[in-house]
Image (tube, rainbow, N blue to C red; front, side, top):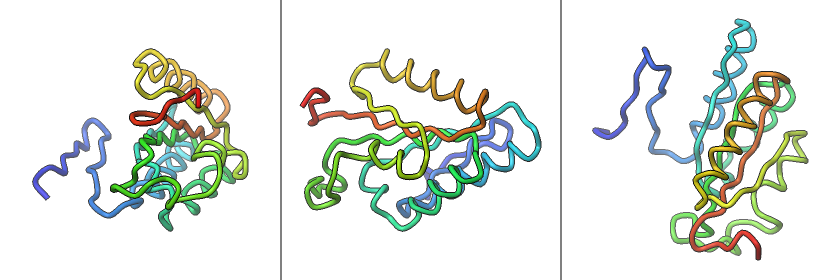
Amino acid sequence: MPVHYGSKELNFVTISTPLGTQLPQAAKSAYAYKLANKDNCVICYFGEGTASEGDAHPAFNFAAVLNCPVIFFCRNNGYAFSTSLREQYSGDGIASRGAGYGMISIRIDGNDVLAVYNAVKAAHEICLSQNRPVLIEAMTYPHNVSG
């Protein structure tokens, strides 16, 4: 597809049209960094609908069990491809899933640029200092973070 840009020099993997394929790729890339003793971590962006795809579970489990330095960044707008969250999953969003995998989870107001910056910065530090994955859920329009 013409908008699937990437750069080997910048370690930027191209986006993928099928939902969820980037999640296991991110976990495996982070594991490769860990094995090579590189002081790097991976960040992978996805929407809450992607967390309902089959690739999410093995990616989260792989990253947590093998202590991969990866940030899973979920943008939750409550409408995965126009499907309401009530039809996507039961429970308290995506961040609450992190505990089940043994991942640190952070839920933030995704409309607050400083909250996003600070959460990603903290997650990056955790990934590098502890070799652990971190799950960030950024609640964005039309959600209200406080309720």
